[in-house]
Amino acid sequence: MELLLTSSGLGNDALRDALREMVGKPFGSANVVYVPTASLAEPGDHGWFLADLNRVHGLGWREFDVLELNGLPQRLVLDRLRHADVIYVGGGSHYHLARSITGNDLAAGFLDALRGRVYVGFSAGSMMFSRNLTERSADVIGDTADLRVLGATTVQPPFGLFDWYLKPHLYSPDFPERDDAWADRIVERADFPIYFIDDETAVRVRGDEVDVVSEGRWRFHP
View 1: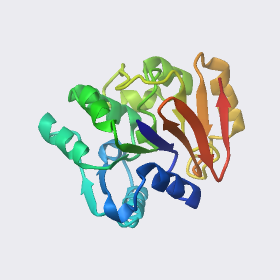
View 2: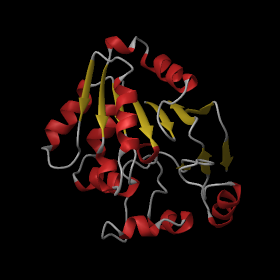
View 3: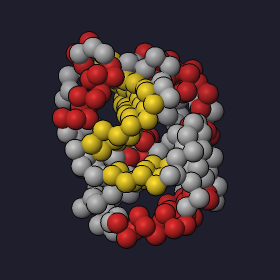
View 4: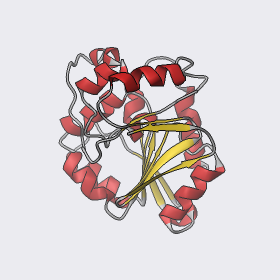
């Protein structure tokens, strides 16, 4: 299983080169499926979503598929994931994305589809793998309002592969409150490891190995 968990997509050469190496062949010889589910729960202007969609499409894939996780038969969703070489899961509401995976009983099949494929996460899409993606972490991080807006008070981690939690958009101009003081306050409350990554950074997972690919800044608190 190979994961490239970005804060804001493939916005620099280091991240694109990392993905190219993980795929192991030219993008023009590979299929990608783009999952926009998380974005659908976000209000307001979606220019950021279109920019990311176009950026991924612009890499020049053999086939570029778009797949929504809700409203389709489970078998169809899983077949489309398996048809891809790269599964790209976009940003938005990580709680909506997590609840879409668990609510549609996709977790086991999704994990199985990741074997032999590369997963790329953008923001919310990068946050799916922690076993600490729960209502407890929502309280620690301070985003319970994002859960409640969905009419929910609980969330189950879809995959639960890692104990560490990933929080994107550190130092981002789009999230001006996410500075060192913000991260420090979270660390004081947290009882689990956290990666804070900026929009030029990704956490890369290759089997049992975890490292960071970055042209920017990041913090890890074990």
